[in-house]
Amino acid sequence: MDTYAALARLDRQDTWHGFRQLVPLSLFVAVFGLAFGLAATQVGLNNTDIVLMSALVFAGASQFAALDLWGTQVPLVPLVITTFAINARHLLMGATLYPWLRHLPPARRYGVMLFASDANWAMAMQGFHRGERALGILFGGGLAIWSFWILGTWLGLHFGNAIEDPVGLGLDMVMGCFLLAMVVGGRKDLRNLAIWTVAALSAMLAYWYLPANSHVVVGALSGGVLGALWMEKEST
Image: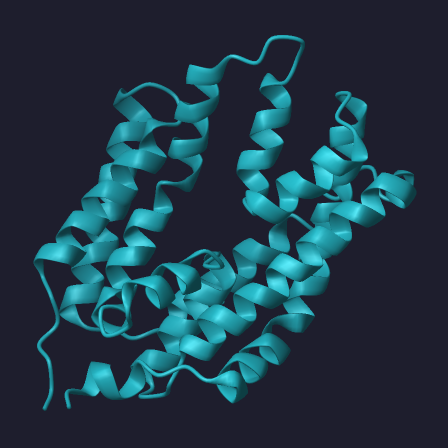
């Protein structure tokens, strides 16, 4: 059994451990869920639709972007393009997780990825590179973030006026600082350096010379393609 296969295991204990690890950060996610719930009511969505959107879509930035396009007639094509652009980073995340996820049956593999977000992905990658079984962080941590996102959305429907401007309180910096800490403390080798460098440079060039928001797609695609082509050597 290779190293990746040995670490690609997931049981209830792993899931619960991952859930508990992400609860502190999930409290901040709930605050943004609260802001989303409030904003969604202001564009005319009913409570059931708002909670269902958070439960089924589970993509905060995309959900806020959808509200900007919401109206009596929703522009479907711009909505799809915007959502894809914002979430294109998941292509890069999937490429980095592939060495471990490919050992799972397809149903479990895609089930785990349904709950992948920036925070639990970053912590899972750190765990894998330390030689730990980190699928529990990816799945259990994702469940924690998802649960608190839905809870925050529900709270926003009823108590949203308490925090109308999370950006004004500096809460928008929490996730960015967390991810920066994960990257700085993450694995440092030629492959990962090359992937992040290509993704960053491609995104910067696209930001300067291509249409608005295209840098997200370009950066994710370039880094993801390089990650898929340049696979890590397996240990036996």
